[in-house]
Image 1 (cartoon, helix red, strand yellow):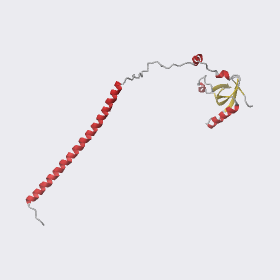
Image 2 (image 1 turned 60 degrees about the vertical axis):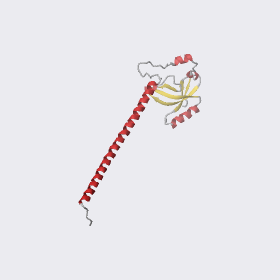
Image 3 (image 1 turned 180 degrees about the vertical axis):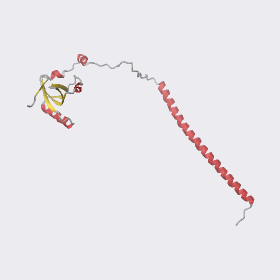
Image 4 (image 1 turned 135 degrees about the horizontal axis):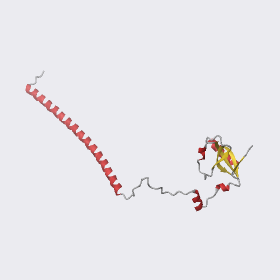
Length: 179
């Protein structure tokens, strides 16, 4: 076995210690550099977000668009015309007057005492309500022939309204079709 002198052994130990210290130094340098790079990335992202926000605010403030007034105190600016005003201004056909002298077929979809069904507009042409005893009978459509009304009733049956049937009106009065 070769014999190493004390000086050489001390020199080798010293080199190992220096290498270990150098390794620790470079490891610490690596971690501190990595931490600094992370901070730089975070600050860069923050800077770009701030820059984008400032640019957006400058564009918003320098734009010549009028600000939108969202206050609730303003009156409605839209004009609402009543049906009478519309009839005065324009030639509007009176559909109910056209159907008075002929027989019109319709499809009855319900008959009930429930008053909530009566909340539809009186000027709704294709929807009518008639008093049948104590019930309010609701029907839709204005058809010239019974066959057209039957086809419409079949379409309603396909959509799930199973209790629909054809009724007729003459001079705006309900008449019995079949005994």
